[in-house]
Length: 255
Image (tube, rainbow, N blue to C red):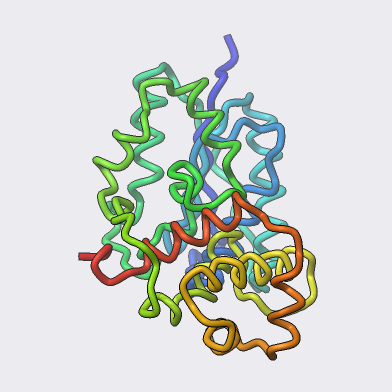
């Protein structure tokens, strides 16, 4: 019987580091998440010089997913080296599926990596509702790994346990980064629809704990732009993710 699940590993032919910054981590996340509406992505993580993905699909579909991610990351990151052939391994049973899931999400611990403190080059933020781009992976996990609960994820990844204290002026310096992280955007600049939506949501969140002039300063906006963005329709889910990202970025949350 053909395997229903596959673990895919991708790396460059010269084995160089694939993503070198948090902005790169977000570009990788978009490449990995936007390539799947149909491949059953359960987990992914970039670990300096390689990428892991766990998929609920057959081998040929897993290889096609890898091809699409490789093309997307080549374009998004400007990679000069080609990828080596992706390694596509079948998952043998439910226990293997569970161990592969955690093996992938714990790559930073396994390799001692510290350059991505909020696990943005993975779907951990999506599994814990800190980001919405890959919320579909949460649905996939419920179906294929029903014993993986949010409480279990938080137990293994305690850095995502954040205090729900009200936002305050001390959070202002992190507002722009939190808004970009909530949509896995490298930054908030530009006129792309997602950038505009993220800026508008950041203004709405910022106005709950800052004066408009301080929101302008935090986001680098002119007062007329800030007012125009404040008048746009609200985006409750995105605003919730921005607030969560703000709390995640508080120094106390990092212990």
